[in-house]
Length: 108
Length: 114
Image (cartoon, rainbow over all chains, first blue to last red; front, side):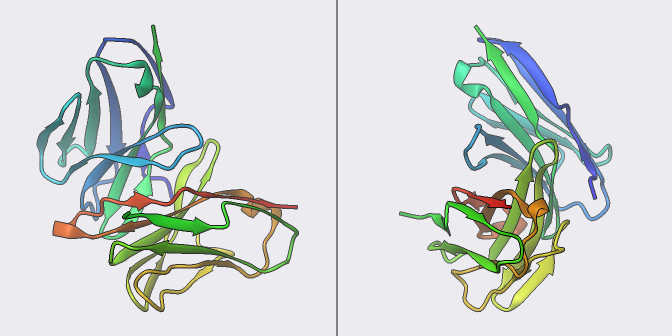
């Protein structure tokens, strides 16, 4: 069943910063992933958090709080090509649960 | 080139006609998985495999079978397809390094069952 929640859609302006939140069921937690998916394409890996704190990778950062069952993906200096769906994924020891995805639209 | 391949990429079939979607990876990954993606429901895991001869049910296994006889291949079998199995299917593999399951996805198979 669905145990992971993220907003359905968001809109932001080119050059701005956007934060996409994700809450998940904490039982059996083994790591939290973020993926990017452009329409009609396969998802591609962005980040992985298993310990609390912030992981930075270029323009993208991801944060995890295990006690709160909460993560966010931070995208800086937004570009038009960042318009895509962003998927939160909860690893429960091999069984992988995706959120429904957040459709991000970047406008000029 | 390291990759996950799926065949066929597109398939239109009729209710009840058995079909197999193949998945193969050339990265010697232990973990492989099948997902379906439907509008409004996101990606849902069908089956996964931690290693050869080891398979487990994901969230939506009903109506599907899998096998893992060798490390590189993980076929998805629909014994009697029905229209509600019309979907976009993705296969993925992962090295499971340090407990991580960073996945590499195949290009997808768009299946229509009439």
